[in-house]
Image (tube, rainbow, N blue to C red):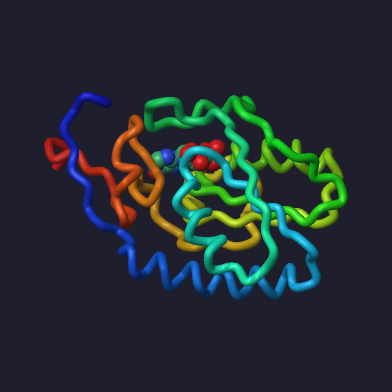
Length: 181
Ligand code: IMP
């Protein structure tokens, strides 16, 4: 499938994403108003553009760290087995932490990461996902903040890839195979 030609149809514009991030950042600012420093943890690689835009809208002292978990490989199906490929650089015990995810799909990745981070006893642990595909959920879980709920479509752009391509699109688009009609 990966070699098959596909087209990308815009689903969420760059402008709509920017407006939503502004609103989310205000809510997050209220939730963490008392923090002395918020550790914003981006899940690589899909969240790299989202986290970059989000932290620039946050009116809080922040520190940025990254964690990489394996999920889809190069295909369109979740592997369900989550492995940590790159761990955080800093300890989070007693700290305020915000986990930034690109998409919650089956929920396996985020639930695994949350279990791991909770075991390190942060003071406050919250999650934000740019996109949520509730129809695909297999684990009972919802991010504390969600940018957009989307239907069961495979999406790319704004950091999100299909077989490592299209991360650089400024909008979120859905992948369509023309021969599928
Ligand atoms: P989950 O473990 O099934 O919730 O999968 C979450 C991860 O799968 C996300 O962080 C994405 O990296 C990837 N993923 C889920 N849906 C899509 C999609 O539509 N396009 C690209 N990657 C996706």
